[in-house]
Image 1 (tube, rainbow, N blue to C red):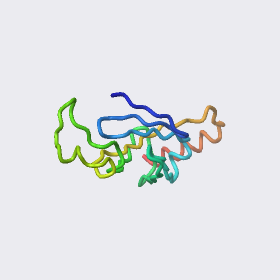
Image 2 (image 1 turned 90 degrees about the horizontal axis):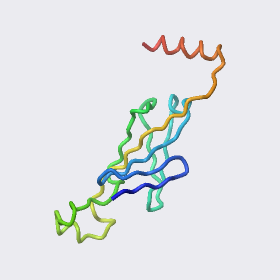
Image 3 (image 1 turned 180 degrees about the vertical axis):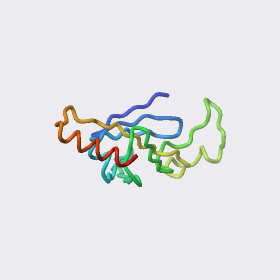
Image 4 (image 1 turned 180 degrees about the horizontal axis):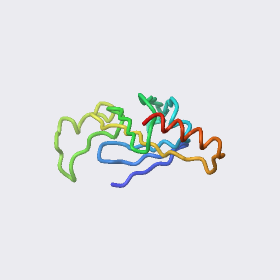
Amino acid sequence: MTFKQEGESGGFCRDGDDLVFWHKCTLAEALGPICVSVKTLDGRTVCATPNEYVTSDTVLMIDGEGMPNAGVNDFVIDAETSLLPVPQMPKGCLKIKFDIHFPKKILSHHRDTIMQALECSN
């Protein structure tokens, strides 16, 4: 089953029982403290804050905010679980990934300052 929903800042894709949300942000937001608010499919809002800057490889995981655990094909793995109302079923994770947009132009003196800062961090 393919599932995709576009949101205000990104979109959802289904990965098994997990939901993957793509959060769009600027380079400045990625390097600074960032709080990601995600409006879930059922209308709630969940927030996540990474411990440090984010990269395109960063994945924030929120347990229990994915899709209800599904059976495999037409087989019921656990009949007791499959009979539970959806809110009580165990759920996968919400994985927040980052789509970082770089500036189209950087002034040369700003570029020099950025390069110096990056050289100091190595």
